[in-house]
Length: 216
Image (cartoon, rainbow, N blue to C red):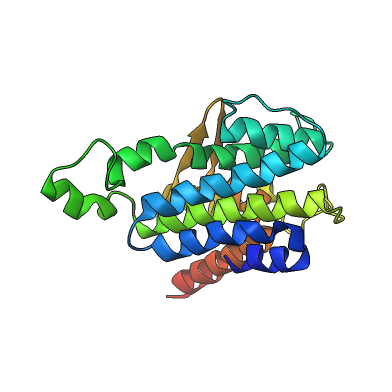
């Protein structure tokens, strides 16, 4: 989680969340339930700190999604803003930890020896890193907004999403669609809106691969 570490090094007030990062990275390969639990806690801590500093009182039973929506709200973003919709949707991924812990946790509800042995195979490597990287992006974005960094939300992108239909279909066939609460986003939409440079890189690789196939 190098991006988040760099962000924390810029703003020392957030240093305590390094404890979560250490746990996330330590258990990522061996016990993903612990990594995901700490990733969720990391988001909640950032959101709650922002709300507290802005005077927003949260309900005691607020979900991580609720905390994130309130954090964006106090930072000046309306519920209809695309940034809020995408970020809260990604945050909701972390909220599924309860179900994931039932599947892969070592102590939740107990397990047979075979289930315990095979539990880490319940989530593939690609999904693990997608979840953690998504949560890292949201965490960095929240800290940046809170610290007053200028972020161009509606900046024009060199590549227009609607003009990359072939690539979007290819990417969505690989990684599918993510439905969370009342929201639903394709993998290509999430990549485009949260990491434009990565989207551009993957798009260019797709074009290059297509050209090479045609030449053959």
